[in-house]
Image (cartoon, rainbow, N blue to C red):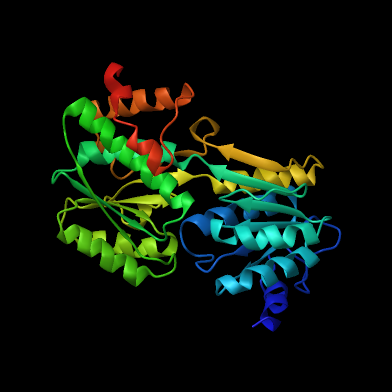
Length: 341
């Protein structure tokens, strides 16, 4: 398997010279994907969009390496570090591998998305995904007709729980303001790259009465949206990471955007301008990095009361108020913050 890594670099080069090698006179960037990889219409594609923008606007030379399993992470990151000025590691699951590799290549700059790795040559980017998810929870709670909403998670890891907890906090606001109790059901796949399993679990939640299903499952989440497309009218999905509204127009109620593309582009720009800033960078609603999609297909579904609640929720977040981001914080959150809304 290892012999395929360098071949991948040579063959998948984007914005490079005609001999398909990274150009020596340009900033060289390699993005290392997890198993779901490019084409997931979500997390990884958002990261690659940031790379493409850097190619177009900064003139960098870039390519990517696709991982087939977690055992690939260390060799993939190592080979990337040997060939690039900047290595972008995509996903929380790479955290331990990057902790091992980054110190071995002090001259290489590493950008890590969805977690924190310490090091003078590492800039880590996390997102306050709970903020956008909080708005989605309010929307789901106000929209559901059955009084049941569901969630399909890829894996039970901190970045996923951050989304999930924020979403449930939004449901608590609906209970506080409207006296409407919404049942919450969830299922975990154990894999971000199994759309068939994602579809089956979503169908199970729909069969139990959920008329809104949030997908937090990466490439597996495409199966959730497929299940909703096949469900009766009135059943909606909520997308995540990327704007997935167009995947099923009118059936994806909204998408919770995580602007990974902006984080990746800005980090590469800083390296290109010799302004690299290591450390942990946390981005949220005030940075335009965690929010809802424009809902171009479903905007007409939103009544005035729902829009008003979302307006006050956004203002509350922007005033530096904290949306719960882990289960223990959710336990102490009762939605009473909304009493003055």
